[in-house]
Image (cartoon, rainbow, N blue to C red; front, side):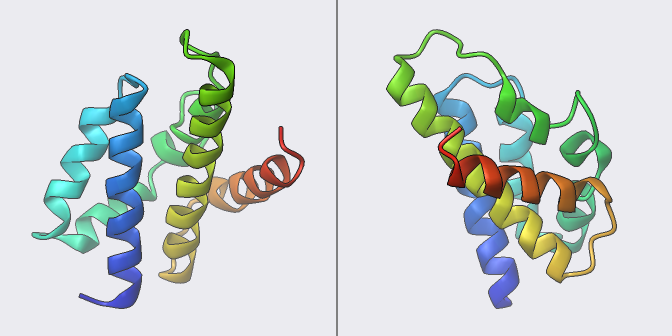
Length: 119
């Protein structure tokens, strides 16, 4: 496995765990990508470059702005920050591997700015 693939798989695995922890409706979908990765990393990279990950209000990236589902506020802030950090890691690997989704760079900029500002 290449270093970028190992980084992508690690980030994706942690994202699946985080989404399961917070009861996110797309946790199972992300877990499926983790499982599929060993068989077809290229297919997973293509899937992760899709609009429902990076483009617009219905994207997984936009879910980092979701309302707190009832967790203690400090815990929710930590989980959202980790969610953003994992999306940054995934987006950076995808871009380095030639991902074309135009939403990735915008989200990476926003996530980095929000995390730096403690938003």
